[in-house]
Length: 146
Image (cartoon, one colour):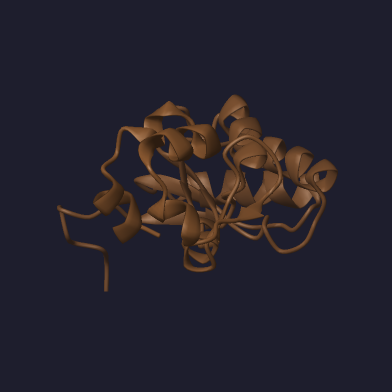
């Protein structure tokens, strides 16, 4: 059955592993099918950044600029910035949910575990730990989010 919902977009998914030639061919063939947008899959499964970026660039080279380009499963900040520079428009990833569920964060560096106790501190103490932005939250509000 053909896609008929006007309130939804249908995306074609480009594959090809880390092979730049397979990525390029997959992108060309997928574009020939004229989708509303294009997903780029299979690039968050353990390859290095040095392997991922050329494969991503090879796919993006053949995807139209006037349609959304969605990188599936990539969500670490460094990879997202590099992908945006290459022309990616959208992302989704479970990374943020998993980090939040395990109380981990990375505001300015390596990932760290957030303990519940700092949420009980006064605003001056929270400011010292997390910066002025967090200190503006009420103690009750910050306690509820930890």
